[in-house]
Length: 166
Image 1 (cartoon, rainbow, N blue to C red):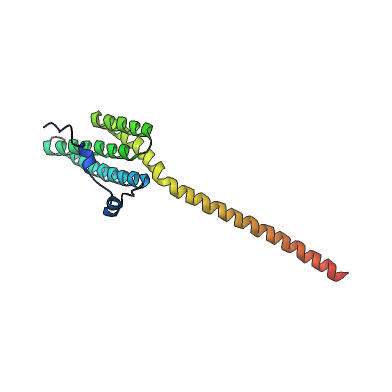
Image 2: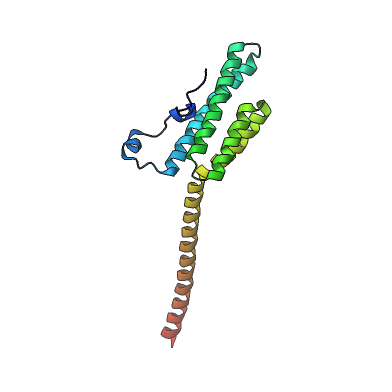
């Protein structure tokens, strides 16, 4: 069954933004990327379940067909991430990864999922890492100021004792 050339690709029909974002038109690029990565994560979970069923019974044609459908869904999910990414070079990279996943055997698919997963982890963990660094820096500054005040306190006490003894 051939797709209509004027219709959007099948992966573009899946929406993951919420109604408020669609109504206001204020969806940020970051939230699109996060939504696309969550959708990809959901699809990878379904792919892994289908792969488990296919490995449990390799002679079952239904399990193999489910695995192939799940693999196509993951490739479409990688396309979603590519579409949501602001960088054209990263978009091209993800489209190549989607192509590799769709055409690859099980080993190649695992490698693609590992690469994509590392990238998504880096993107999604970055805000938490920056927040942690900010808290660490603030703690270090407070500890330094505390040490400084403690040292000044000892100096003040010794100066006060000397003045009093004179």
